[in-house]
Amino acid sequence: MDTIKKSLRHTPAMRWLMLLLISGLTFGTYWFQDFFGGLKTIMENDMGFTSEEFGRLIGLTTIANMFGMIIVGGIILDKWGVRMAGIVFGGIATLGASITALASAGFFGEDHSTMLNMMILGRILFGSGLEVVCVVATRTAVKWFKGYELALAMALNMGLGRLGSAMGIALAPDIANGSVPSAVTFAATLIGIALIMFLIYSVFDIKLDRQEKVEGAEEDGEDFKFSDLVKLITNKSFLFIALLCVAFYSAVFPFIQYAPDILINKFEFSILLPENGNIELFGSTSLGNASVFVALYIFAIAFAAIPKQIKNINTRRVYMAVIALLFAGFLASIWDVMGIWLQNGSKTAALIPLGTIIFTPIFGSYVDSKGKAASLMILGALLLIFAHVSMSLFNYDWLAYLGLISLGIAFSLVPAAMWPSVAKIVAENRLGTAYASMFTIQNWGLGLFFWGIGAMVDWFNPKIVAAKQAIADQLHAFNLKDNTITTIRNGLQDIGLASGQEREVIQEMRFDEISTQLAANNSPEKVDEVMNYLSSLGEIPAYDYTYPILALVGLGVISIYLAFQLKKADAKQRYGLELPSGQTPDDE
Ligand SMILES: NCCCC[C@H](N)C(=O)NCC(=O)O
Image 1 (cartoon, protein in one colour):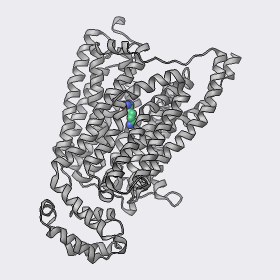
Image 2 (cartoon, helix red, strand yellow; image 1 turned 180 degrees about the vertical axis):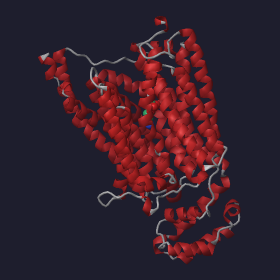
Image 3 (cartoon, protein in one colour; image 1 turned 30 degrees about the vertical axis):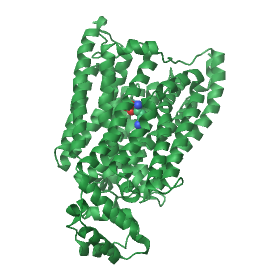
Image 4 (cartoon, rainbow, N blue to C red; image 1 turned 90 degrees about the horizontal axis):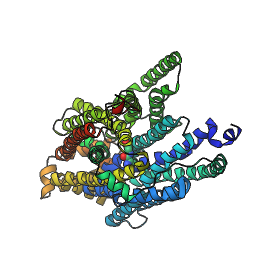
């Protein structure tokens, strides 16, 4: 007993400190993965990106993982342990993020193709580290928390990842303030800070390894084996759940990346927040807006993950009542601002990953106690179809909100049912191989749809793409800082009078009205500001997203088919996916 007390991980404060140090990588990499979603419009206006180029940048992030990086990372993780794997893959992600940031600032050259290609190179490197780093964080949590609050630690770590996604999407436009490199540099710095936190963690990890050797404890880990892979893919239930993972996540992650742009173009949500939509903290609106997300994360964890730790029912009730009161007070204090946020593209889109922080642990508990995992995956696929149909075929704001809520629930439901089901289908010593192969094929789907949606937007909107580019090019040629509103007005009129595709789209511009309003708007100095202003007047036409989102409906239909097949296969193979945790069909 004395020996156990001496090990670092047996001290609660130490465990939570370690979780904080390692979760930085989850938070930072999820932020960097998703924050470009909030910048798409600025990237088009300021850097001349097309939607296809935006999609290529995001899609190619997955390429190393498509070709086995997760498997290689898993083998390295098994051989070198969490410390070395975290430093190496965290280092690769940091290097990649830094190259992307430098490229966006024109460090490697200011012409469009150099910037784009170097940003892509950076993202490929970043993507090479991304998935392995997430596995490292999970494994490290297991190392410190096994026998203690492991489920809570995992929920907090995963929740911090989702918080990173949400904050990245929501705050990137505030941080960029019309200049993409600022937001990219900020996101890259976050991963750099996370890597430093992981280096600090490594010192404690060395100490723990020394102490645990004394105790004779061993790190658990399942090596990747190709022989296991062959056995897995001949198992029908595994095959269906792996394909469901590809189809489902390909309909969710890429959608989230484009969600701000969809809300802006299709439902006329705002690109930037008006002044009264910001929350100020210590004189900074970015800090103030960020604090709302941190507070929502804390409430989500307080509602969904902490109550399970309170054994006494009365204490739990009092705890829930106090949290509910505090939450009501918090909501009341930000009510007006929330109304404005729910009309803003990136702030609203960010609520999808944020919502999962509260719903995933709740659905997880349901699956544990009641089972029905296969049926819940069918329900999740149905909600996915409803979400995408409501946002592709219809144009009502209220339906879009309902669609977003359905998507948030599906995005909580399916992971909560899917990942524990894999553990029922696959023997424990093959779980590492199972997750690595599932994430590998998942990256094929993600790469295809990240890129494909952008390509489809350009494909279905050729005139709008041409018109937007003509206006942005003209505004860039003006050098706005030294220019007068009259020059802008004349320039815009020139485009309006031009022949070609763009003329058909922008010939209706109300030039005099625009110039008067721009002048009243303190003569904006940035192309992005003028473009946003023209968009808000309805002068710049919006992309039609109907077909790109309909492609995601197709993925929903495939998901529902696979979920039914999974349920059928499970009934034959008797893994007990419909039963509560710990029960098998033989117990009945
Ligand atoms: N945006 C981070 C990429 C990690 C994704 C990972 N392959 C995954 O699917 N995790 C499960 C989840 O529900 O996020």
